[in-house]
Length: 117
Image (tube, rainbow, N blue to C red):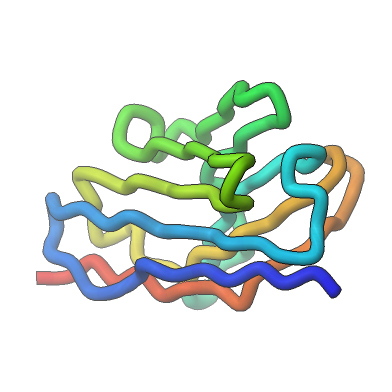
């Protein structure tokens, strides 16, 4: 049984930082693409960043230069370091792992990030 557990969300002031973690079990972690998505109230879920099996990374424009995705295949974990947070970054952040971009994959339960003064 595959389990993904996100943690690290919370309330932070604009300009602050948070680090999200995704921990997996029941999966061959190293064979999967790991991606972070987010969903703000009233909006569709959107891709934030992804890291491939070979550690190549992809970022969407609105987080490029502020967020960093990484993975540790020895610990079956992935991190999303978020710096210079803005109010528009407020959302529930989800970890998604999949074999390739055509695969729905597995989702975590999400972790709330709120950026507010």
